[in-house]
Length: 99
Image (cartoon, rainbow, N blue to C red; front, side, top):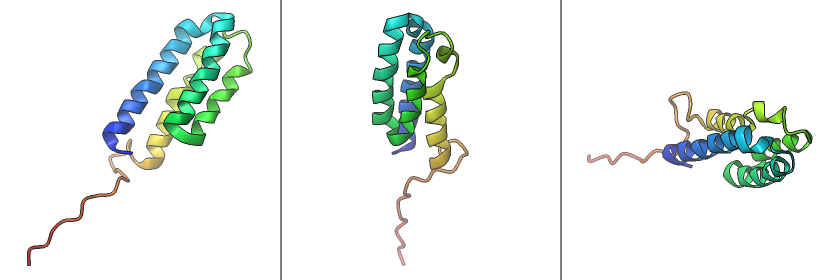
């Protein structure tokens, strides 16, 4: 994953959390969107996206909207890959030695 690709995925995770905070508070609709967002997060971040499954536990859809689970998962992956601390773990292009 490139640094640019990471930040695009991070923006999608933030959008998922914003939708969960606003539209996700509707009782039945919120439960469905929690399931769909878990599938999307697993496609974006791999097994880390499964952390979003905890939002299915809250059937009232009031408490889980205040925890930005998708953004936290994205920040965790970015931290693990070094995209947030100024050091990227993406492979660098080897320099040519003209000598």
